[in-house]
Structures are given as C-alpha cells and as structure tokens.
Length: 336
Image (cartoon, rainbow, N blue to C red; front, side, top):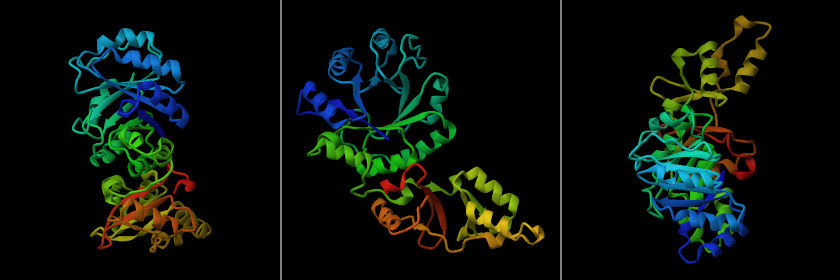
C-alpha cells in the first residue's frame, strides 16, 4: 500500500524542509490539501521543483471550474475533488489533464454517488474522519464501505484519508487499499522513517477488534447443513472467492469448513466410485478459527504461532456461533 504524506500536517518546518525530509524517507506520494485556495499551486510548484515524489492533490471547493486552468498547466499525478462541497456535481475535467482522478466522500455519503463518475474517474477517497481535522480517530464503519465499493468496482482503486495509524494501516493493507494518507501520525512521530515503516510493514498498538473489520455472514461464503450438496458447495466456494465455505448448523453454530483441498481430496477419493461421494465427509470439523473479540494484536500473535500459512479464518463468538470471516489474501507471509 502506498503512503501519501500530508505535507501541511508538518507544523514545525517550512515546506522546503518538509520536502527534503520526505525525499529522505522515500514516501510514495505527497498529499496536498486545498481548501478552495488557488495559491496551493505555488506550493505544488515548490514540491515539483524539489522532489520527484508524485503529488496527491485533494481539492475542497464549491466551484471546481476555478481549478481547471491550473490542472491544464500543472502535471499532477493524482487529483481528488471533495464531493459534498461541490455546487455543480457535474465535473468537466479538461482533456489536457492526464493524471488520475478521484472522488472524495465523507463517511455519511453513500458510495453510490461514485456511479456518475465511474467512467472517467480512477479511484475513490474515503474520508474516515471529519475533513480538515487533523489527528481524528478512524471511523470503523468505513471498513464495510471499502469492501462494498471494492465489490461494486473491482477495477477502481481505493484511497483512505483520516486516522491512519500503524494498526489501521495493517487492516487497510490486508483489505487491498491502494493508498492511505498519513498526516499527524507521520509528522508527530520522533522519526518519519520509523513511522513510515510502521505504516508499511508493522502493527503496534491495538484499538480495533476482529469484529470491526471482518466480513460478516452476509459477505462470507456459508452453507447450511440442510442444504449440503456438491453443487451447493461448489457454488458457495466459487461465489465467495476465498477458497472455502463455512458449514453452519441451523442456529449458525460452526460445524466446520470445506476448502478447496477438502473438496479436491474428496473427489479424488471417489473417482472410481462417484456414487459413494458424501459431501459431509469433506467437512473439516476442527478448522482453525478466531474469536470476534480478539484485537489486531491478539490476531497476529495467534497467526504467528501457526507453522502453516494462514490465508483465511472463520470468525466465531464465545458461543461458537459463526459471525464472519477474515482473509489475508493481500498480505505476504512476511508481513504477519
């Protein structure tokens, strides 16, 4: 995941000093917040004169057309418009602009507003705290919103701004988020390089629980015992796209899971006698599971104890009721 450093969050240094520090840290993007001020392009000019790091410009304005001439003349890699502030929601971006376009939305704005921009825009920016407020806490409802957007627009990128610390960064990386903006966490740290490493690779403090960011049952591959059958299992595994399905009792208690390997082994064992195939025999009734009340730190400790790679985990509550799933498809084993 790329880290976009919010340059105006550095309150102690002038912009040239901040640029030099970011050059030394090898940050991925430089995030520039613009609150309806065309003078921002003077700072962008300084950035581009002193750094090769791509600029990530976030424009908050009522009249987007005021910024069009500058977008024609400046070679800016990422430009985002804040949806809620626009008086005219129809954006006619100049064809001369060749960078990537994004639409920023706050937590209370439905992701469906992106529909009108989907043909021309490249990404969405989820504002996970109140825009313009530095140091706010990440609103966990955005975890679900990110998943919903990814399901609807699998070919569009997701950027996130607000409340991104080392723990949130770990969760976002696991979710496949393309870029996250970091301001106060990055510049209030004793060392930018250490903070950047935490955002990219590590997880430190824990404030979120597994239940905060897991896929719940409506988003997870499940099949009830009463519906067990080869076709139903194949359909559930295929539609879930996680490589397994959970098997549940009528009261949502976890009976077990059937993974790709269980399915393959069951089919191989009955190739010569297909009529003897019993899907129930494929169920792994002692799968590795995780509790919904585990913190991120506890989850990582749990995974690290395993000698085999862990790609996914069913999530259960204290009564062994299935409540969701977590998967680690977007992480390499070395990160966890």
